[in-house]
Length: 306
Image 1 (cartoon, rainbow, N blue to C red):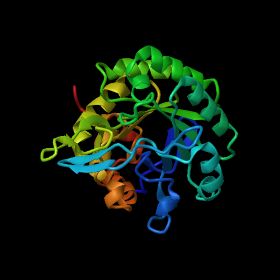
Image 2: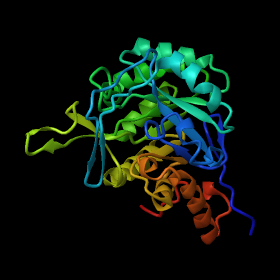
Image 3: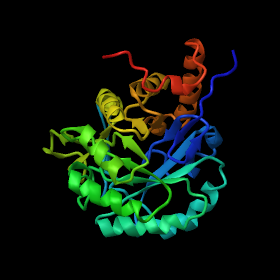
């Protein structure tokens, strides 16, 4: 048997394998260059960029909890100009698709930053962050209201020809509705899930452990929630779904693919094991060989229930 094919396509992005890094957990990629052969990734999603530099939240903004990680970084970033100057020259030389996560506090800011990235030569796509739970300005509001989601996705779609991924919020009543709204407004693919709104308290001081009070929970605790939402969203739309949330190893990634995801994004585990994403690629390949599958597409949506 020949080696199984791992290639997948997300919008107009051709990936050598279905594993990418999740925004916010892999920096701008170049920080890992001495630790990981980045060329072995299917794609890379860099952390959220806004039109202008943004300081994020004051510390403490990262807390370990049972079953995961709670963060309130607050989307700290150097803004479009800083990213284009300090990071893009090296990123575009890696040789894999690079997707930039973008965000704004208003629809006008989303439009403006998307328009700036439209002119950035070599960029594979944009991931629209409408679901961040740890900033007070904008944040999750765009991702939990269908009308607002339609407006912001449509506005950005009119500003860019790049492949457009929309990162959906997990804390909604019906993910199918939000998925269909994003698809109809012009999304080429869906990313889900983002971190789940959560809080941790210091029982001695009786104060929140994060300066922001509320943050986003990631890690294995949210994985079963993410699998359910990916399953539901993938059945509701025709566009590809990228599964993320609590991936620790290849088994979790394969679970997302079976549920209907066409690709996966590896998140918090990269903070403790920078090589995790590469190991997951090899794990998926071995799984396909063991089950006699010739192409990863045979695994996508292959759930045997209901």
